[in-house]
Every structure is written in C-alpha cells, then in structure tokens.
Length: 201
Image (cartoon, rainbow, N blue to C red; front, top):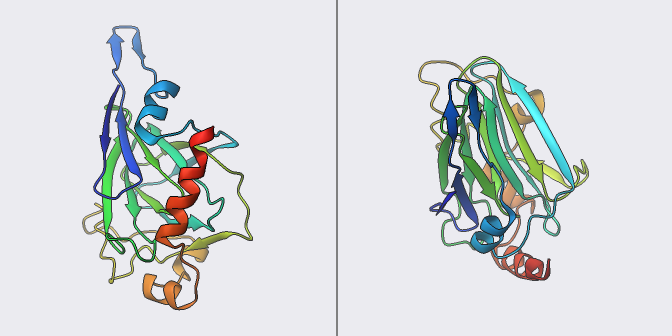
C-alpha cells in the first residue's frame, strides 16, 4: 500500500495494491500498521457509514466540534466521486484551502482526514457508493456545515456544467467566513493537541 500526505496537513491518501484476474479483484483497503505509521496513531473505529448518490449530488462540507470531532477513512466501492478536504481550522497556515482526490472502483484509493478538517464529495456517476470508517459516532449537536459552493473557498467539484444537487441542510449552511464569525470553526492548535493525545492508542 502506498501512502501520500496531501497538501493540507492532517490528510493522507492511501493507494492499495489491487490483485485482479478473470474472477475479479482483491485488495487490502485498510492495514493498521501502515495507517499508524503514517498518521501517528491507530484508527479508533466507532462507526461505519455508507452513502449512495446520484450523479451531481454534492455532500458536505461537514465537520464536528473538536474534541473529539470525527476523523474519517473514506473510499468509493462503486462508481466515482471527487473527495474534497477543506482546511477550516482557524490559525492554520492553509486555512481556507482545499484539496481533492478522485475515489473510484478502479484505483480503489482511500482518503483519511483527521479531526478538525472539513469534508465533502461530489458524485461523478449514478449510484456512486461511498463507505467510510469513523473515529467517533455521529452527534447532531456537535455537527456543522459550511456551504459547499462558498465562492470564498472556490471548490471545483468536477461536475462541469451540471448543477450540484444539495441537501436542504447543506444549501442553508453558512459560508466559511460566516462560520468563523459564529465561532463554529475548530482551532488549529486545539486540533494539533487533540491529535497528539491519540498517540497512546
């Protein structure tokens, strides 16, 4: 398995080796020793999610209060999505910046985003199925959103002329600047300290 740190600190892409023949394919999409060496701690698995999306659906940008937030290990098992990570940590040297990775059922890449980062994805094909392992359970009282079409962030969701389809909650989400004014965003140093505390896992 190959591991690459993404331009936003606290995010990585894992590329497994896919063994294929005329029967199909086999791969190891998570390996604890590889993950722990890259990230600095083991993955604390508390919840596993699966979503299926039509082409043009955009989900995100979502994040949770730190601590404990909700780190995610994300892959696409059917179809293709553009997975997007946004640095929403106030005080971070890359605050407001974003990066993206195509996740699909061919290359089988996996993205890990640590606590305090914003996350979303756009479905590039009908029926795109995303599964992700989460370090904490979903808690609606601690969950927040930033508008995925915020021009201040300027994400290219890879949909061309297709109009993104959003949930009502995401469509009503504040911009990054508004979320900062409302005191919703995690702080860079608090995220770093919390992540350092996980090294005992």
